[in-house]
Image (tube, rainbow over the protein chains, first blue to last red):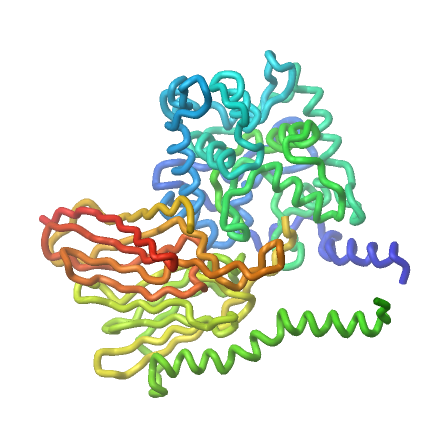
Length: 288
Length: 140
Length: 109
């Protein structure tokens, strides 16, 4: 067998059920998620206008998970991701950098940042670029707090902080702007989403738009929504960032991933976030 | 070093056996040993103990398990297919409100989870449940 | 030594005398099993919480012997009978000799 034929075989095996199209047969839809008995999460929503014809319904990744995994997210005590949020709270109140400031010096409390996660990534006029929450944290640290070495983009400290900023926004509707100055990055992100990468020649869309609900090996493909990030992955027993997940996906296509924090991944994050406009912030969600 | 294709395949199989095969083979005896250490080889009844485990666990790292054996002094949890069979033992004190406990455990692949309760009269009860562990689609 | 080991417990604030209340506990801990290999190929030494106890007003509720098969961030849920107002004392024992404690009060009417 030639190498090409072998790879073709792999592709065919991966999508053994692809011919049947999107299959939600063994996914239980229609259930609602309420966290701590009070935070209403929208797990199924109308797609935004730009997805017309691509998706008929938006599904949170929660919908694709088993009862046990779903239940872990319904109560903060059961959600191990909240341990990292607690570490984020400690860091929020800790002075860092030469200016003698903590996050709390400017932002009072984490709840005051509740409007951040639902609207990011967003255009930053001063920097002339689209910024993610991570970039915004780094900006605060270097430009206002006097830190020479801000948190690394995918460091544990950064993930803790971003998880905290997401946690206070849970239940708020994701609404990232895709027009105006953000349009250029959004277009780039869309192009990346539909580009086939790696030896497996797979695009984001082939799995997460055309085959969500189907099995990839013994696992259900989700729509690849990122409203639950940073997300606690049972596999990692830790919270995982959006860019880390993107990198993992591209690596699994046997491609060479863009780097974490790269303009390509920022653009992809904006585009993928916009595919979830209408769902609600869930981070830190619990996923497999 | 030159290596023929056949040698290479053979090495691969040996490595695979070392990783996946042998721990299971070694474990059957280890499971029996762990059970014997707890029960002293006594017979075990199959009623009066409830083990709740998912039929399919989405990831082997964190599998929720609940066990309930009314009246038990202690309940031992074992995972028959893990490199080491012991998982944990719940010893109940006088202020225990029930003989129910739940935790989250690691399972190295599909296997049987075993719960054994020791009753105050020295008898033992046992429950077993098979748990399939999902092979993830993407390493991510 | 494990970093950021933080115990958390949840018990009801109040209960009626003789009631069995549900107790939930969680401690952030990597529970390094001793089965994994690091990037250098060497086995990462075992480092786990090996025992957990809960007492109410000095009386034992539960004493758990823990092996490496318990997941990262060990979680336990169980019931305790409360006959009077008092305090739960929780203790976690680490392989490295560290002992972590937490307490919680409950009012019994």
